[in-house]
Amino acid sequence: MWKEMYPDMQLEEVFVPWGEYTTKMVTMAAGGEPIDVVWLQLGNSVGNSLNAAYWVERDALLDFTPAFDAGAIKKEDYYPGLLNEWLFRDKFWGTPFEVFQESFWYNVDLFTEAGVDLPTPEWAWDDHHNAAKELTKRGADGRVEQFGTMGTTWIDGIYEAGGDPVGADGESLQLDTPEAKMGFEEWFFYTGNGYAPLGDETKTFAGLHTGRVGIQAHGNYMWTTFRQASQDLGFDFGATLMPAGPGPAPKNKAGWVGYNLWSVFKSTKLPDAALEFAIHLGYGKGAEPWAATGRVSPLKRFDLDYYQEVANLSADEKERYASNLNTTFTNMDKGHVRPSHPYFVINDLNWGNIQTIFDDELNKVVIEKSQTLDQAIEIANERAAQAIADAKGG
Image (cartoon, rainbow, N blue to C red; front, side):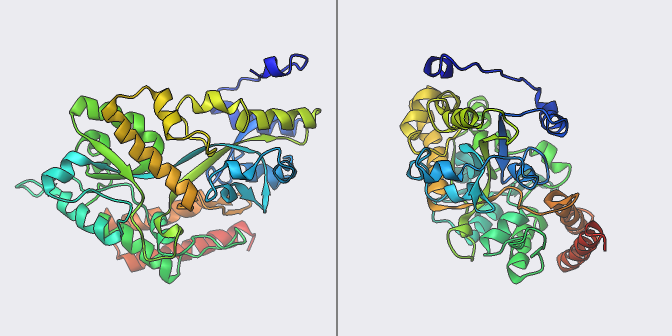
């Protein structure tokens, strides 16, 4: 496609196996080799060289903001609630081309059997509480045979309660606030009461696709897995928005989201051509082959009719697929999104390290049962504060 449009321009495609991709970029950059167009992420892989912010902090990427301002990439062609999520340091660092985000999936058959109304976009936390309780089934021996829900995290809860785990500076934490407390308590409602699988239970009750879980908060890309499972096990399923927490809109229904973009390194010897190629890949004609695989684009021209056509679905499958895609489109339109990994980086310390600290202490509450939720939150905040001090050399 590009060669047809620009027959005089030669392209060299450098194929790198996925496991070596980030290492290759770092090695090339360190060795002074020119890099042209690359695929990067935002909202995910924080602290990793796959994240665009990693390279922005090293002054390695071309600024795409002028291309947006000049109309080479039109902002109005994107879903309005989402485009600002591609900003880092108030600038665009590539052409957005894919969104992967959290949906609230449910097993229609299990809801019907339990006599519980199906989830709707108007659901709130209390509705989720009731469904999780009613859908959880235990045998005569007390062992769980069916879990009501899984996948809702304490990070989801913090955002939906109106909080943010990380300060605006990207180097401070806000995990001891009233909003954070509500988020931890929301997570604990499901895990502490046995309505969600934990530890080894997640091997047997791995998700909605087992037919033994009523609800699962998971990525919109799980469509293909659930589609196959529904055919194999004979159950119907759907997806909707995350239940609303007590915080202000639009984050009160926020699920995690990650963003892919085509970026250009400053080391390229052909900055104008590289910029044009990145725009072609993510915004122009080059965006079409990617969207045709079913991967969700943030561009409004790839609508429900488009995806249903390329997916070659049956009439029943179209209805299921529509519930997932319409959820994604609504999230992108209304801004019901939060980063998969909040941006927090201090030297070698990143959000993944902080999350591990909190998960470790929270597991002592629901799996080891060796401390209370309040104790876990307090200890985790103390450990995180020490990790920050160590990272800063204090």
